[in-house]
Image 1 (cartoon, helix red, strand yellow):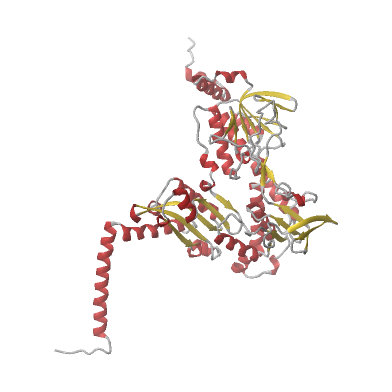
Image 2 (spheres, helix red, strand yellow):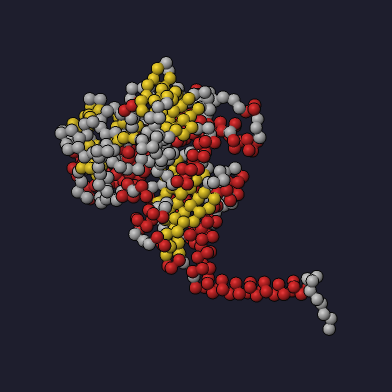
Length: 561
């Protein structure tokens, strides 16, 4: 007799993609979303960078039918091909070269002329390209389809209505839309007629030994690439603005990075007073760039890297009359204006660098991609305010030393944002040169960790609001500080968390323990009583010791009775 299959057995026999889709169909049916059946896809994602990949994978994992469109012929966006990944690969090559022949190696190994050999640009480019393709191997169209069920199409997205997009002359209808088209480098007008480099071209032929490189812009991108190329042997000059290197960072951080650049033989060229830039005109002739400055001098370089900022990229037909109509773009950044749920129109969302005035970080874009997909496909809405607020964002510039901050990182901001008296805000600081691991690795003696504290319960408790880290492992330490600040932990709670020794992060437990013990002894009832009793005992002990020493000293008189 043939036995009937159970519901579970039928479910196991069903393809995974079909299981997911049925799950989503059932969920949406429960909330009255049967209209989705009228479209080819439940979700259209345009742009396959950090935001787009996250949105597409999350949507498909819910069981939605997802189409991902990318105008380039590869997935991954700026991060994989022109940003985070290749820049960190270039920085790693720079560190390797510096370790072989730099000042830190000289301190550890002594000066050895046999190690001072020139770096070959093609070798560095090959290393960078291998790293990029290693990362891309984890996010190919085949991987997206087999592991998540995402369909991918390469080409320009042309919107012919609010629910129809055309790619390569083929039309696709969709229910919900997420725009994740990222950003592109800004180029000042005076450089538009010369063959400049940006982060989109520099990695194909990195400037190394013998090259004279001018970097226009002193933000994170400019500083990272300038120092990496200098460590690879290029003669680097950075044309800065009125606030010098990393203008958005703390003064102490800027000073340390400036000294590090000088140690790496990087020239820092400042504009004249009252001017925002140094260069007045730019020309290119016989493979030489000539920059005429406002000082009246002429500067010559072999390569010119533009890193002055970025501008949002928006599909040209998105706000046509046939599609979403009235343009809702920010005049300054060119980005899409969204609400706190990342929506710019009914059933339409945006995530990542294409949003107006958003912190342009890969981790922010990824988080927004998830929130946009969740809000587009599931009932209710997640508030994305935290991803739009620079005060809550961890950020790291991967110079040597690294510069990172997260949360509220200074007293003035804390007083303004929290609306508390200045007396309620304290800063504790610790030089990492006092950390044993940092000493072993010849860390910059001026590197430091700084935490901003909110004082509660009449001084008995200190909650960590955020902080700043300067050092070779700033990015790694910042991860823990971000977790601490987000969960509103106190210095006592962090002090009780055992950290392994010797690590760079051990400094956080030491700092918090020092602060927590101080508060216990000075502000708690039992601590004050214990301290008073301990001090009285200690004082009496010192007095007795002094009397004993006095009575037995050579100058004292001993009377025998």
